[in-house]
Length: 160
Image 1 (spheres, rainbow, N blue to C red):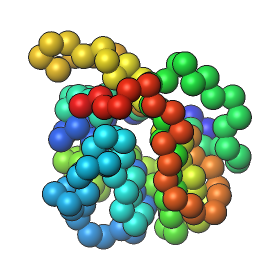
Image 2 (image 1 turned 30 degrees about the vertical axis):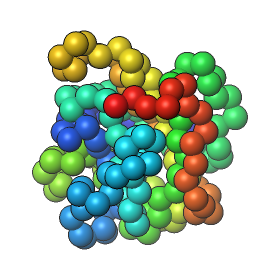
Image 3 (image 1 turned 30 degrees about the horizontal axis):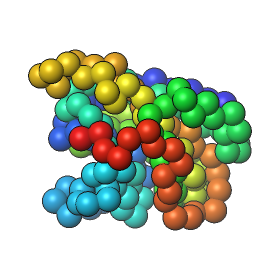
Image 4 (image 1 turned 90 degrees about the vertical axis):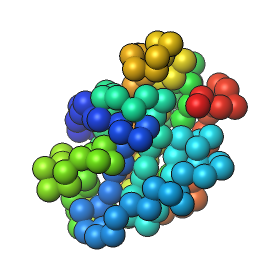
């Protein structure tokens, strides 16, 4: 399994993964409503927007595998989502929503659809001012048929 580590500026409490060929701007006003806020996940074609509990730099690990993870330790995570992303370009962009897109990190993949399991931990470790915390995020991707998103695990009804 390939593993990549990033420190992403989660401006507006989010970062994203997107196919490099997605050319339109992310419509922040309409995607972060209702269930998306509560699930810390907003989806658009070719884009996974991952919600965070801080709008500061957060640690993110992305792992690329051949099959779904089978050894989830649910108690190590406060929240787990699963969703799909189509990456026809074979280039996945990883960035904060205000990052300069041409300079953003990229991961080369075999073109196609991927499932993404998104893990969230340390969501309740924020300082009183919300600037510091031990929150961290991990995403495992594997080739799969695109399917609906689902919440796999949640320890609280809301984190925000």
